[in-house]
Amino acid sequence: MKLVLYLHLHQPYRLARFRYIDLGSGRPYFDDDRNRSIFQGIAARSYRPTLGLLAEALERRPDFRVSLSVTGTFVEQAEAFAPDVLDLLRRMVRTGRCALVGETYYHSLAFLLPGPELTEEVDQHRAMLRDRFGVVPKVLRMTELAYSDELARFAAHQRFHAMLAEGWEGLLEGRETTHVYCAASEPTIALLLRHYRLSDDVGFRFSAQTWNEHPLTAEKYAGWLAATPGEMIGLFMDFETFGEHHASSTGILDFLRALPNAVAAHPSLSWATVEEAAALPPRGALSAPRTISWADQNRDLGAWLGNDLQQSAFEAAKKVGVLARKAGDPDVLRDWRRLLTSDHFYYMYVEGHGADKSVHQYFSSYGSPFDAYANYMNALTDLRRRAHEALRRSEAVVG
Image (cartoon, rainbow, N blue to C red):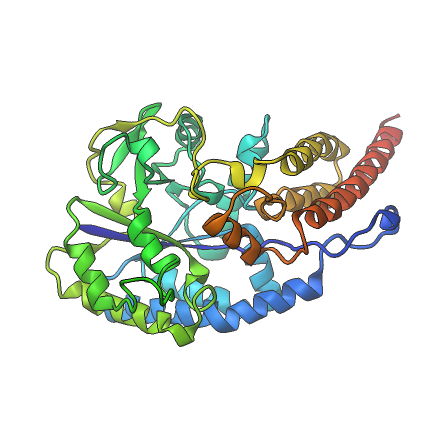
């Protein structure tokens, strides 16, 4: 059984308070001080200790493998606020046993836009990985593990070998999540699926004292992995699982430190990067006519586009994007792409209950989703004004 440990690193550019009366004032949209404070805090609690543990495991155990995705907005903020975090990432990549995964540079909803935006963001992200880490990714993930037949065709056109997807029953239709499949729409694309139960045992349940399996030890978890039939287990999680979502006081870092040795005690288990797992022969084809994701219980796009606020904001962003691209101003285009980051729409979530609702509230700093919407729309309106001005300037030069 191949174990694919894949962790996702992302930080958005959070918006500053931007009121209607601030339109045209030149106030910045993004809160640099808050972004710095948040990034440096998480770096201390999660990024540095966890990357350090992973780097040590790679150097100590030749059998250990890990895969990471890092967004462009994460790398930009790491360079500005905690450059040693990138040094740790490079240390891991140099071992040759840490694979980096391709995606959209801005962790955006570009895959829902017409035209070249998705291609340009994926190309920008690929160039960033090449320039900062010296690697060219062979495996693609979309924002929040979005996947569809159409996205598989896109991946093939971009010469990727595989995509990551949620191992959801609606996609599998009775098949097991512990095999490699291929895309029905593009058989050259291997599909690596997230085993959401085993992933969520760590990602969501680890510190839940009401969980009947608490406390979860590395030895117990390795036993579960060894008892799972199949060829591959996709352990896909948010990187901040380790030290941020679950504080170090819960024992989560000790769990991670002990896991490679616990796995080694089971001869049937071995580690693989996403690229190595993608080379396994597929056990059939899977079709996703509509887009699925790893978010919430419905595994769809409702976390970002499930209500009127989100849909209104996204439609407005699409229209501003047309102007931003025509305007030819790189600052306007960059700010629009930062506003296209999925997190801004996630903060506008008003549906759901129970676990879904609590997860959304955990990530949002707004008093309500309506506050998130108003703040976002004010910034977007100002960006539209700037795009119009830039377009008029460019037309005047041409004229």
